[in-house]
Length: 194
Image 1 (cartoon, rainbow, N blue to C red):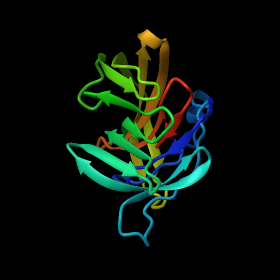
Image 2 (cartoon, rainbow, N blue to C red):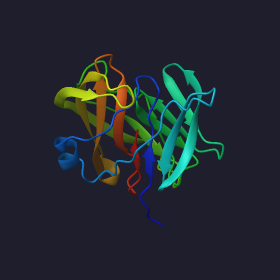
Image 3 (cartoon, rainbow, N blue to C red):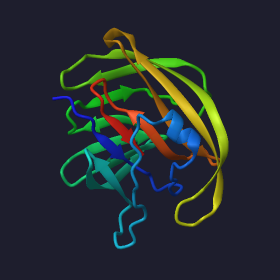
């Protein structure tokens, strides 16, 4: 069954941002933008409201190990992130794991690594990444009305063996923290907005 899953994750490192300018709407119209609530005061554990398949779910921060943030629900859905990039999923329809993800923080040079899907098991497939900064500007942080500088990094990826390619986007503040990202999770149409 092919369904689009929409996941909205916002890590509480730097606050949250609302995508509201014309560039975002024009260039990213194939992604769904939904509102999320952040910093839930009643809860003592860092949390995010995530929209998964249009159902609101509460994700809690389970752990931070070697720069890998693990977020999960009480129902066992788990996402592992490095620098805002989902590198592993658990208990989704087509789980995956990207090994040795280097990302865009060191530099914007092209590189490749490996991805493995679990349902069905794909074995290790080479995945190629390339990066570019497509926009820089300022936005207001939601909640505290303070301006911040950001750069929008575009991540192109392709897995030639299965003819899958796509584009992910990361809004990064001046402290090099990912405020928002839009990511394609698998060749079957799942997307994540964080």
